[in-house]
View 1 (cartoon, rainbow, N blue to C red):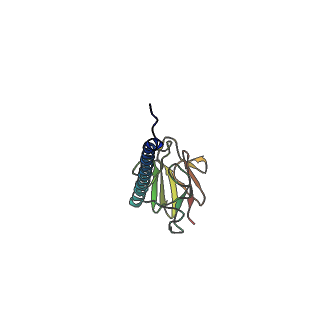
View 2: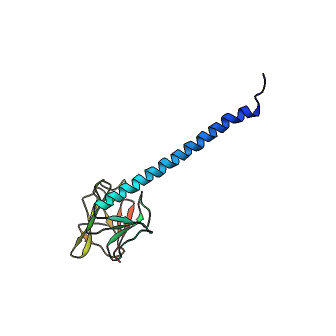
View 3: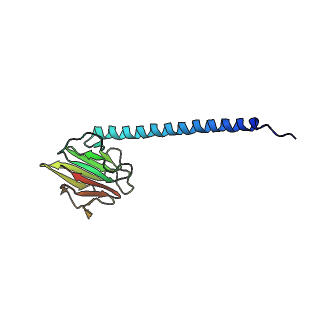
Length: 160
């Protein structure tokens, strides 16, 4: 039995490494494409209803009521949602601010403008909505800096 020359052993390893690199590149491109589709679908959902998201680099109108993300699965802390005339928060697909919190209901809470004031109201959710760590009972007016918590998701109300 004769030993194979080194060149005959290196060639299959080289080919395998090339295919591995190409495979990793395709996985990366698929991840980028998926992330883009998710971001675009979020933007489209926001554009169709009351709330729109603006990241730190985005433009926003000052003096308009908005929610800033403090912590939320699938959102970046500091992202802001313009409330406009109102917004619905929940896990469902037909809400203005969609959260991926397992403790959130499909349509969990509603924000609405009434007589120049933004109010928050729980929509008979299973786990409730908290305003400044107190259970929300009925519709309550929001003030600058109020914190709205739904499960592990938390927002701060801003209107400055």
